[in-house]
Length: 172
Image 1 (tube, one colour):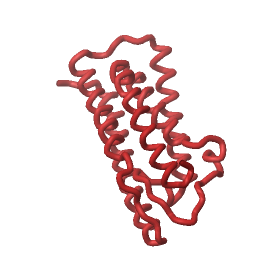
Image 2: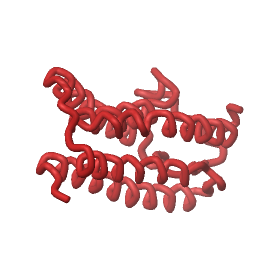
Image 3: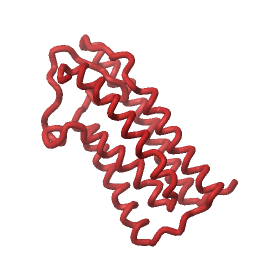
């Protein structure tokens, strides 16, 4: 099984990003717990992990088994620009939430939800960025079946996760 070098590069960068986010999340969780906070369980993280794992596996399998689809270059370039923008939005969200950004649902009692910056404009900008990224990265790599295949599962998992977050934050 030989993958295109661009696919390998994108998968490596996306994987490195996810590993960094797990490290940052663990660090942030320790800090919130030090301040008297706690992680809510269950928090829907398993569903997120399953969808993201399927996303990585889907890109590898689609390219290895079906090859690239041959989408028009305009679609590929538009998807690439949106994929980069979605990563920028994710980074901005992580910065905006600071120590309160986490992969899990980690609550700091007595602290209201962050409603400044990006989070003052929309309720879940990070999830918007992630959905956009899960669709545009495979499209930019000319792997449309993966893009289509992860969209509905991701939306269903996020619906469940947002309900958990809202309940934990007293928004429910």
